[in-house]
Length: 145
Image (tube, rainbow, N blue to C red; front, side, top):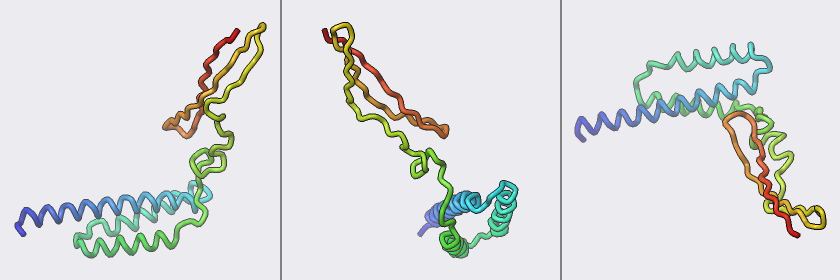
């Protein structure tokens, strides 16, 4: 294999390792928040976690890095919180779809001055980047004499 091919292979493997470490750190940090009751406890555990990652920051051997990441992932999976916090209005939360939207195409009829006013309800879910979900109900009215 040429020197260019070896360099490309090395760089690709190194980039994949960096991505694995980044994902592991974020997952571990979010899990530390599940274990902490108060923010000051979380800040201490987050600093300890950061120190563990920083201690091995300058390791260069690819096989050693792979082994260390595998060990850290196994430890994380073993020590993960059994009942993680889920935001109530997020999927899996206690308030998610508590008040489900009405059935699409639902007709409601009213008598108005001898004619019938029919309201046709259709629903659309609108997700925003904020932590709320709103249901938009579109009304269309027609009067039948």
